[in-house]
Image 1 (cartoon, helix red, strand yellow):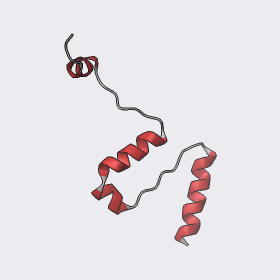
Image 2 (cartoon, helix red, strand yellow; image 1 turned 180 degrees about the vertical axis):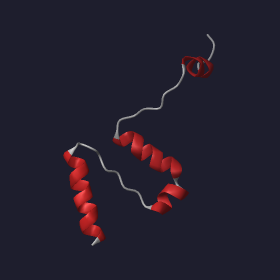
Image 3 (spheres, one colour; image 1 turned 120 degrees about the vertical axis):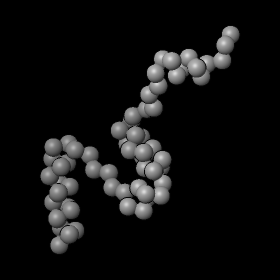
Length: 61
């Protein structure tokens, strides 16, 4: 029954163009960086930095 419910819920969300990404609990608790990377890459999100952080990372001329 749970599989049917999951599939119906997925179809409903996809109907409204909501993207579904699933992770095992173990991955979320043991490999957070990997999960965050997968979420960001799935939505084409890039790391954002502030102008001051970029300036601090740039070696002086």
